[in-house]
Image (cartoon, rainbow, N blue to C red):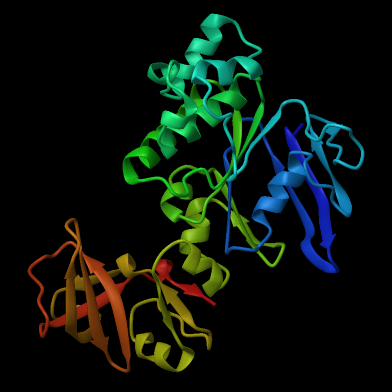
Length: 327
């Protein structure tokens, strides 16, 4: 049996559909990320799952038990489900250990393990008004964990964090799954947060699930340009321009636009089955160079590890047909 079943969830707010027939399942310890533009319904969906917002239709089952909304319960929320909002608050001017003690259901040893995993053991004597944003985020997370949840819902946990605190929080969230064996659903707008972490990603737009699959599936085979844009840069080649690629081996030109990621192009030797082009711009990014290359009838952006290429060079470009999406 699935740990979580979301079945036909819809929500109408002020006459507008915020969520439209959302359905998916979550297995224990499966990591699901939710991606989508602002206003796509991601946060509202998490709040419905947590029992904090009442859906207009459908139901959420957690370990076989229906999650009731706030119109059905005096105190909103569901046992075993913890939700970390973007607008979390910590009581002001208290010591961190006091804030955590109010929610703690664990033994001293178990709580100490949580604090170690969240990397806040050294902060327990500090007052909440003496903390950085990243420290506050990890303490808010520990406050949820000491209540022993089985499902943790994280709404944009990395927003407004600098690189160091973001990397620390990523390591903490990974440890929550690996060491504490707590199942997580995470919302983030940054593909660097979701692609390496998730087992499955749901892409939302306009309150609906537009595509779901593994990170590799969504990155390599997006259903449209909207999904492609959520996970990084891409080249979109119109049907008329795509005819230039028909000469490449195993390449099919079927009247649709072709979508190719920059790293899928490669530079090949003269005489190979490839398209001749001229490099018009080179940008150095350390581990790779990003090139703009003028091919017959189309300008493309590509990435290469060859740092000897310069603007004005004549090059030959190819790619694998497996790297192509038709949209």
